[in-house]
Length: 59
Image 1 (cartoon, rainbow, N blue to C red):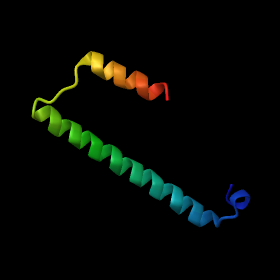
Image 2 (tube, helix red, strand yellow):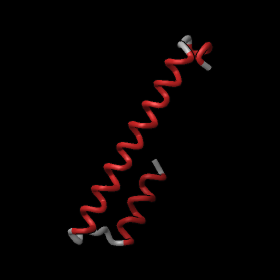
Image 3 (cartoon, rainbow, N blue to C red):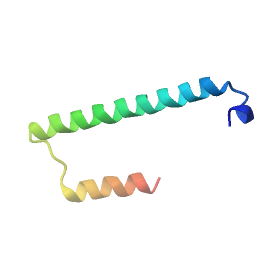
Image 4 (cartoon, rainbow, N blue to C red):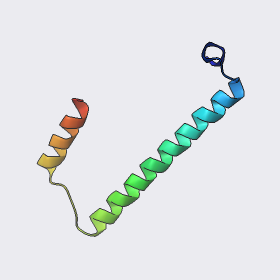
């Protein structure tokens, strides 16, 4: 894959690992935000959540 992309194999692995770490950090931040909202009693009703998921999946 690295050869096909014209990249150094080591750098390709580093770039991929950094993307995984970045995505994990975003996910954890979103989870913490959701927990904070739930602690404040801020919830989305089931019908609204279903509509949001449907819109996300139909993109």
